[in-house]
Length: 78
Image (cartoon, rainbow, N blue to C red; front, side):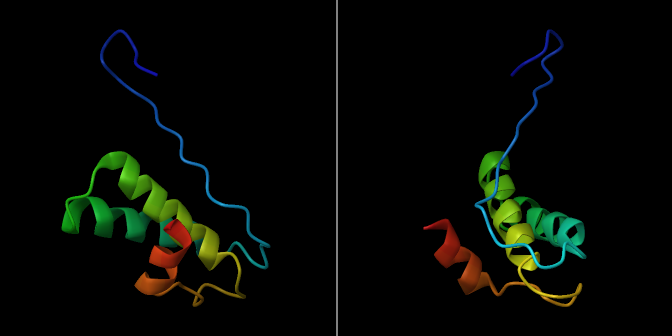
């Protein structure tokens, strides 16, 4: 969707997971997005997809210390 001043809104849904605890999901999303977009130079939508997958994976474990490994997220995105 694009506004009259060239602003756009994007939405990326994550895959359905059995959420155990959402603690740390936002931090996981932001860190993953920054990694993909800023450090790896990926596009906005691809970075959002990556970040959504990381945040979803974070919700499958208990506590904020449950973060996915890069390989786990890559497998989920295939």
